[in-house]
View 1 (tube, rainbow, N blue to C red):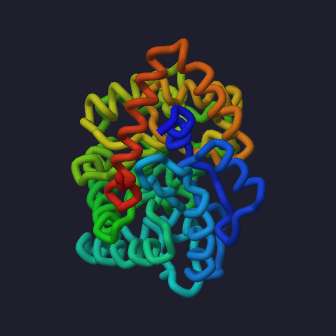
View 2 (view 1 turned 90 degrees about the horizontal axis):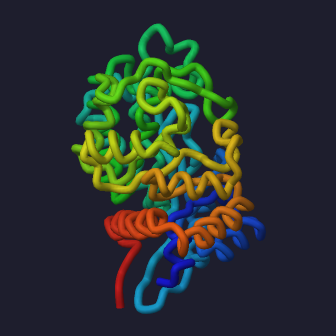
Length: 340
């Protein structure tokens, strides 16, 4: 791969769940982007989604001596956070309801839901939510509790059931991304819509990390890092830009060897204090591996910043090299990478 192709593999941007616009297509090909996110709830069904994923497949960068296909992701958690609906997709209950099922039943159901994604050309689910919302915060926790995205109000239930979900998805050949490390269950604001969202409670070795520890042990290929600030861990940086959280906690304490994906670093208000260029460089230097931006126009300034900075920054060069290996290893798990 050329250096530009390697950097492009570290980005995921959004396309419409019912069609790819010319601007989205241009951003992907211009940045040689290796992954996309299907955005926008649709009831049009699996056949329409398969048409979109076939469109996306044709945008994959041409790599000499290898086939590196596009990774296609979406948010298919269930309940209010289920992007793909209609014929060919089951109506998935919210995580709070999934948390009441027997784990064997949930794993089997998730395998079915994952099979539906795979048949439509979707190879990654940005799920499960591994955040635990304590009972007293369920009604005020905007990102998780208010939407019933949590599997339970204690870390053990959240761990057993989020892990059952991810095992089922993996059995169906769909990559999972446990989120939002190190947890959004104890905040009130939503990082998509609010600046300065801060968790004042979670500590580095917190009991609420159990679902993430379980996901790592079960082999989740991705963990999504949040964009909140964790005052007792790294008060100066959002988690997505914190080497203490990504390298120290997730890699060091939890032993995670897969790829770290960001939450949205495009439209999210929480990261608006940094330019797109700064977000990209800071995310990779902190130890992140796959950057998600739902704003296709961000791809050009983000990739340009990384490519411009690499020749004069050994730490960034090493981070990019490490990230490419991790992202390609994940692609290989679901048949998106072959040599010769």
